[in-house]
Length: 185
Image (cartoon, rainbow, N blue to C red; front, side, top):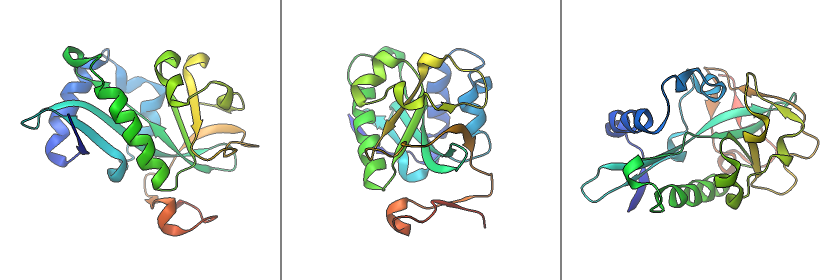
């Protein structure tokens, strides 16, 4: 397996994989509303490719604002593995790679909506989202977070929010500690 950045040439294959992996109507879910009209972060969008280049799995991260103070964070997902290849480690490899890349970029918080049994080994927990809310319906036990920096969610309360459609994204490592990650043009 080869983990590489997602390219524009992968778009059709990734969408087909998401269609095979998730039930119809996935675009109506709350997490999709946070992503709608906001591009995934290119340097945090990955595919796991088979020899020959076929997409076996995909993982993307999206910019979000967390809590009433709009603390910069990431929304993980969707993570999808071709159903014929599940259980072979493609998703776990992408998770390890993606989280390491997010941490290396200086990100502090990652949230997701997903299966607690799958994501707990990667450090995701419901305990970190008890003071947070999503802007639509989610099953509470599936709303999970991970701090890439210990204590990053201390004192953070409120709604997970979309980043405005015209926000400019820059990795925290590039703009310096303590400065906002998302800025309006």
